[in-house]
Length: 277
Length: 318
Image (cartoon, rainbow over all chains, first blue to last red; front, side, top):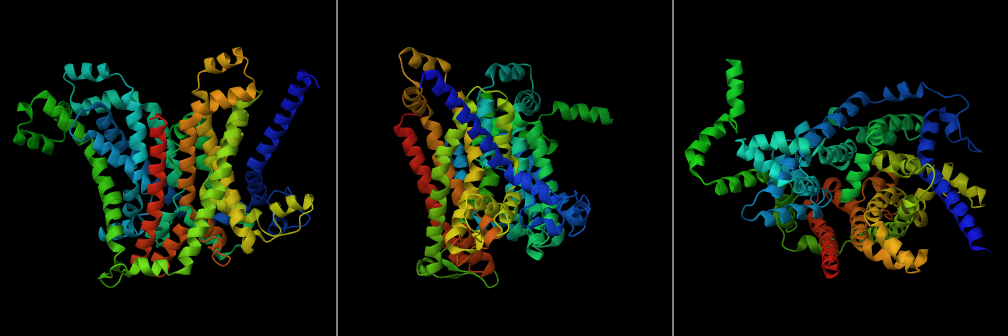
């Protein structure tokens, strides 16, 4: 075969691979959407039924009325937004301090902060629970939010970004008599919007999704988050798959919208980190 | 009045009570250098205190607790090395340890290669590239619980996985209820979920390689494969190491999938170490033993991180 033919065949093969890969990647989404619109009987029909005969839009309101899903979604939103706010605030403060000031033990503090990446919740689960219990925060929003409000990854991200901002910006403001707090609010924060955006997206996604921590700290039904509610619904009636899938679709909407709208920032943030998950 | 107060607040760099504190320590008399030292430290302080309270203190507490017998009700009793001994003598712990090890390597090793392949594929010029990237990266946005439930559904004996396999002549299998297939089924989900994530990281690494290097290699007569082995791989080494360690660490933490999909079964074949710890602590209320098992998990994480640092340093890549 000539070189040209090889290249042509290779290109064709790669295209087929690409498309097959997309199919495999998106199959679960397709299946979830299709199932959420089927009747209970169609879900496990044999031979397999890829699309519902008639879309059952009522599955959605029916599913929502099964548990206190309005409450669960509300709780997830509160937790995700509050944790996001905490991370944006404290991580940018600490990132600024570590990037632009000199003080004794600065490098040591930075290492110390980074080393907490080795201590995910899964490892310090029991004692963190004991701390939160000691603070009397079990079964409260505070207990759900406070332990997650600072994450070393966010500090790392903000520090790296702020480090690349020119020092002259800060020094000029300082010469003009701007207070340190003023410099932070009026110079630093407006100049690191991209990093703040990526951090906001990542923390929102991770905490909208929070499962393990609420599972342990929120036993009261009114404090459950959407993943807990969904798992609970599945545990009670695992046959209602069409309705479980309907809730799953709704629960996916916020993160999917964020992903589609801010795709670039999202991907950049993840690429920058990879430390998440 | 209100406006005056607002103006005063704006002029004052810190809240009022801090202002008087500053006067008490004679802030204005300090040199600029000292003031900046303190300012920087104060910026870092809130985050540092939080991490001490919710990471370091719990870690030390876990270490202490691993020598005590504690059931959340009665006060802890010192138990020496008894927890470690009973964890070590617990066959379920050994099983969990090996399940975790199998899961970690079963997920990460395919991820290392497939994610790189995906990144190389998406780095090529082709029509509709940004749309294709979007499709591949979409699972990153999907929440874990949704992933777990959708896949549980697809693994159902009557589900879509068996249907697809029946096209190639494989009989129906109850994936999640069979001892031999439950863990591989979970591993497959881990891979499916990890590839896009690590693909993004590889892609960023690939894009950071200056084009001139490849051009120079082509001028020197290197083919596509040679240019890949001698230019791309060495320059991508930091990213590769990073992905290797991160994929292992994230596979180490898996918990939700076994909990929701198999409840650690059948016969404990999917009870990973975090699940074992969770069960010991919150189902059996044996906090001390759970803490001892956490120490083992921590040793894992610590060793992996050390290896990564060592490798990065040896390559002179830091």
